[in-house]
Image (cartoon, rainbow, N blue to C red):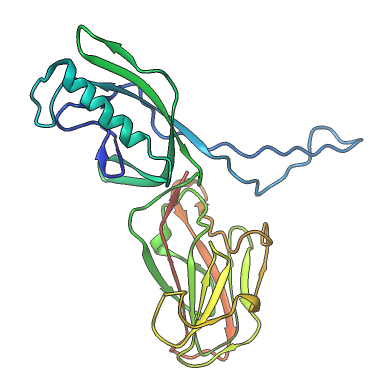
Length: 289
């Protein structure tokens, strides 16, 4: 049975203090930000590809009971204490909270905000309270808990990024690391054609770190992923492809022909003057709609 955990606190309390109602839904699929384009003399609309996704919302219906955390019935007063505890958890406003969805071996996380959607209904006789909150996922997609690193060639066509296989959503915050020697290195997402490139060379031992989510780059000379070190190289990066003015290299999974269970992120890299020491690495987490 699927469960949710908010900031490390189970929303189905193990002691029975509160439980999500059985009608609580699985996380919804995101909508598409609507854009329509019509022209005179042509039926219908002009198809537009690469539209952005809308933030998703998930209602959580919760029942609060009169049990202590150890499972002992405590009457109406305990129900009030439990209600205060769960509303305090849901009432965080100064930062995003982390919602964890778990169904067997499937684990997905998302940064969320929570808003009340109903008044609290209390049955005094049974010491039970009920209310509904709405969880909003501003970043739309859900992610793996653990970041992974993939290593490939600095110059090769259609390389599958095996650590991101199985994703269903775009990955917009990957960190790309290119190790020299490499002249005019570039990396392209095969599905969308988006590319990031640097029009100069990397010496042996030099590494170019490209943070696609923050649209910044650093040149370092140590084996690090820390973008607070090294020399700023952001102005040396050129980005092309859909939406490249606002984002760098959205890694996008492609579905194998006839097999929707096979989803692979593929990249093409290019550089000249490479050696056995040259390589491309990508660090990120898988993404899910």
